[in-house]
Length: 263
Image 1 (tube, rainbow, N blue to C red):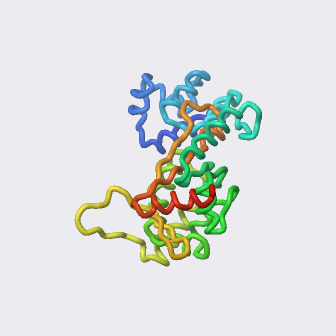
Image 2: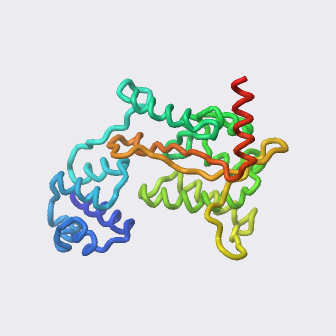
Image 3: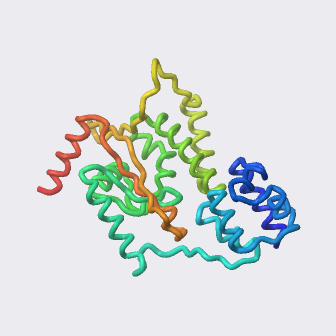
């Protein structure tokens, strides 16, 4: 049990690219004690394990296993979003999505499954044959879905590749994200010659996603919101992605679509 904790500690320290000295300084303990914890010569207290979780910026989803490997009971729960005790969370999520209209917004889970959308996002995803419960990761790799809907598919895939790698590194590895990253990398290499884009002059501030809806084009950039100070596993992995128009034409088109829907 204790050796298992030491192995886990060493692995997470490696993921965060920290030496024993780095971790010791950040945690305000000696590098020697870190070494003893990794080799099993010292047994950590529960408070020590929790403090190391914080220092290593471990996601909530990984902390129970870290505690268990040290001989302690798990302390984090994974609540159902539909539960009564999550009513205020659902209300906050719905308020955020609805008040972002007429611009698209949707809530996503850890694996990029669509949890909930607002009206504009439902229309946009519907044009690609997608709805709540579907996976955006699978859709991105499907030429009959996103390949036909996203005009700059290669650029979007490249941006997603970088984003997923960052998310996966924070989580300490995830099979679903690993598979998606491999699929995107393979598609970029085979279909888009690696998608190593060259820019004349300065690199743009953002790379928008350009969606095709019939003869119309809509261009967006996105922001991501997450719940702060959460100790729940599912809630810590929930994110709300809000799209904003990158040009006046897209803005006017969304406003017109909203007026038609409400009419």
